[in-house]
Length: 256
Image 1 (tube, rainbow, N blue to C red):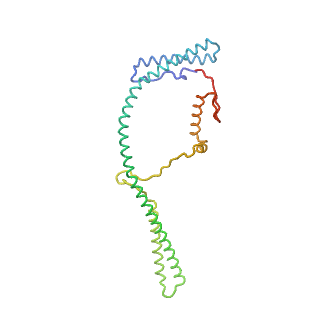
Image 2 (cartoon, one colour):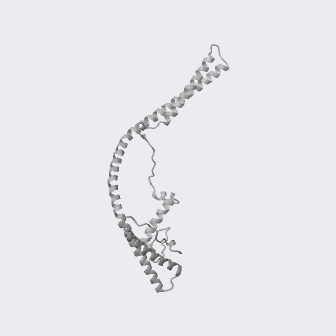
Image 3 (cartoon, rainbow, N blue to C red):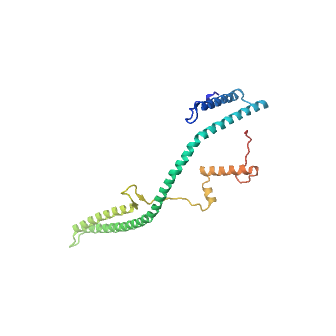
């Protein structure tokens, strides 16, 4: 293992921190990480109490340096966080007021959109009925024309019946197009002044039986992770007294 593998140095000093102060901190960190590398490469195993105590002393030095570096970072970031919080408070307040006004008027427009949608549905149903009647009429006149052409009766105007059938078919096509157009109509406002506002269907789940819902989503990764986190919280609190079915409290000894 080399010094580079532990991540020594090679950072530019932050603008708000004096370069000499930052440079000294980097030098101290680099020196301690070199010692860490020697512990890793030259002492693969702790074989005595003295060696363990010495290793613990080095760990303490690393942790103190960590605290020092973190404190410097926090001191440097603090003014920026304060400034950011002030900006957020100032602008989010404006944004919230604007959003409130827009939401208020959106709710005011909603009943009108619902009314337009109801009228469009009624118009679509009427157009569909007209198309159905036109299609039936065209079929009837087509049959009459075919009958007149195949076996014309005295005084029957076969050509007139054919013309009538042709006109009825054209009328049925026009009625069908009108019905399709009416069926596609959507309630909208403001399309001439910007992005149109319409009605969309938004779906959401209402949990009526939590046990069955959890069972249904038992293979979902998100659900499993949530259960795992809840189980860890419970085990950390109850330890060996954990008595939840499906959960085993496991302990592991770690140096800390």
